[in-house]
Length: 254
Figure 1 (tube, rainbow, N blue to C red):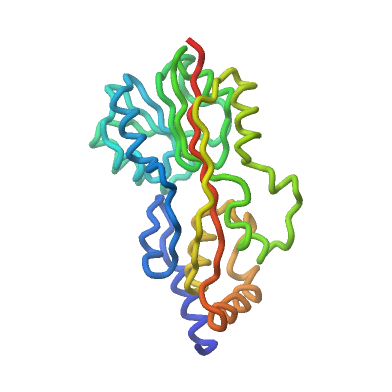
Figure 2 (cartoon, one colour):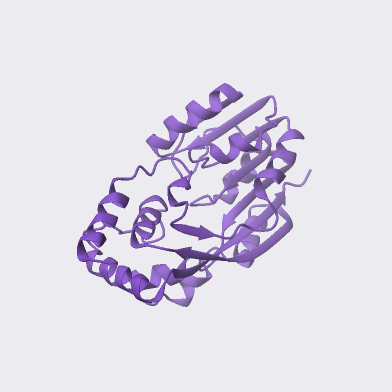
């Protein structure tokens, strides 16, 4: 492909909207294996058995909306204004209240307000706050991004990462943090999943949307590396990376 094709891919991906947590723009341009456990289905089961639930860092609300089975009291938090608007539009008709809240303590709810707290791919996990807002006997149920997720892509842009960074989000670390907050971890599963990026536009879109992957990412800052990546994909085929996902369920003692 010509240099102009690279510029076209860059322009297209740079202009694509990245609000919400819908990745359909990547259809045909990137793939990612899904965890075997089916988080959204399991989430629906737990929501159906709850009386008051909170979904933390709900994004655009797509995963929560698809789970259904909302309890009588259903709330969600989100910090990014475009996502707050999208989640409100999607979840309010279903009976959920979306609360604008920063991704840091405290959560804007009273102690023991919920018997279920959930989250899918939270950027940060504040275990003490989760424990605080859970009722005795309540449950935290979540799918977290695991350790070394997409590190092939991260290191392509940032270079080799330290072992300390590689240990972040490790299930053993999260178990210790949950237990330190007074929660009992009753289920914990880890899977490593294959990802493929078929063009450089897919990479740009992904990095613009999942902003913590390469935190200082902009097209201008990494244009030379993006061009190298484009040429590599043209030469060798899809860029292969791997994500990790952790299913975790923790309970507050009764």
